[in-house]
Image 1: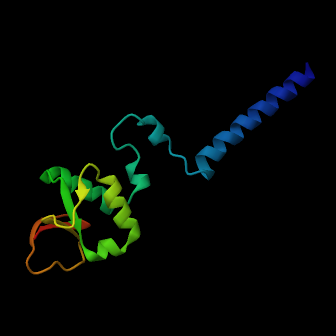
Image 2: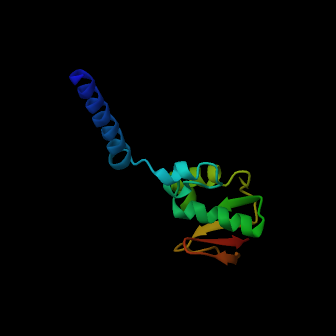
Image 3: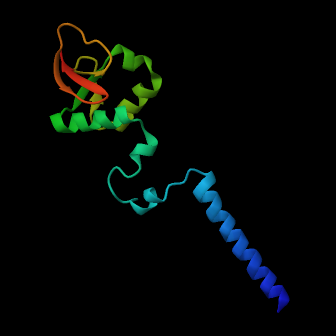
Length: 124
């Protein structure tokens, strides 16, 4: 009987340790599991706010292809995430629509279509 109590106590300690590891050590987020079947669940944990904003701009303006400024192209993180996260919208070097970072100067022949917190969309 005493061995059963020790085993049960050991099992409880192991389970408590697993919960501790998930909660405080691994960066695991329960809200991702709770919303696993919702569209865009957990995107704030996976990509930056600039990339999320780019998808919103593309959807609002119904744009299927876009171009990126030189400064965005130089940053490999932004470049890759912009392309992957905004699929099925595709990057096209000859597109009229170009994304610029908010603090970046646009070219003279471009007209600003929309300005948000992190990005501006222009038509050139």
